[in-house]
Image 1 (cartoon, rainbow, N blue to C red):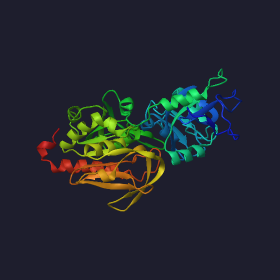
Image 2: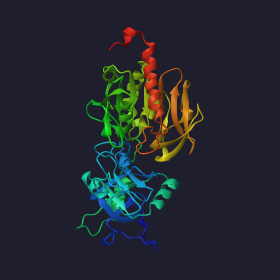
Image 3: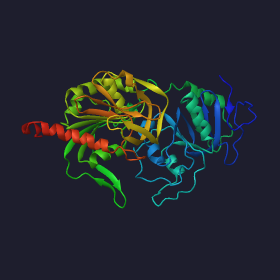
Image 4: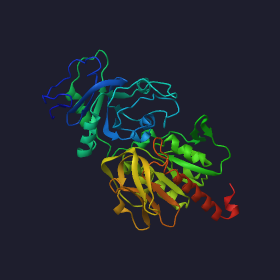
Length: 413
């Protein structure tokens, strides 16, 4: 096992244990699988958690980020220093039970300064049994990830009666964790039962709305769906039925949908694809419009015969430029993914529709002559810019076009 290196030890001397925690410092730490140590002040729940350490560059929306199911198995390092300053509330969540493993912050969390705040971030983290770490050099962590890739790590927040901790043991926990490749995490965050969704987008002074008269029926396959995605569909008049990730094509088509949505989610698409790809292939044979986002995009690509791979550090933030190759338009997008579709693996008849202007990686595809398309990024934002909301309208337009093309007797439900 490699010697432990401490980011807060300028002498470079190695040591097997922490010193006794001092007030406001040394109460928590992040230990990477190679032994690199970052010490700071703990917040949230006490205990430890193991996962892949990533970074997110968003300046706002930390509560939506922390509740995005796509962060299952990950420890998020926020590059923006002022996290927690607007507190937390019951509205800005993307799932009721966060799947993230832990949060790493630069600055100590201040008292909330927003009129919408209902809880301090520290209290909110405790309520969800999430470990947090503040007061560390997040720039150093980010540089390390950019240069060497996303590492495995163990985040720990000591209880008051714990004076020392065996760093080598924490390093061993991180090193022994298998990593995200080969993990089907969608099965962990997906719903267990089918349910209906009718909540629509939030508005100032009103809060969230509710679907009135539905015009279309959409089945959303839940690989880890964010609530705001479902709200965007409902806001456009879609009666949304959400089904588990392992729902069969027969079950999905049994709801008599006008369109099918493949949601975002965590983990390795090839692992989830073991059961999801055959289902998506059968759904494509139905001729119904299909729209995929994030993991849904990757699963769709696999079903079409393309390949995926793990990225060096992934895309996570709310400022990623993406180019629409058909219109030439550039969108500033919200992203969260650690795997990508290999554009050169797209078979004939499958067009690359969007590309990242950061690294030229694939950001979207469409099937020639068929109402099937997907994007790698998050058009629902939450958090992030709303440049890409038009994609939900595109999906609805496809549904309406397909319904209009059918004989009237076939449209009757």
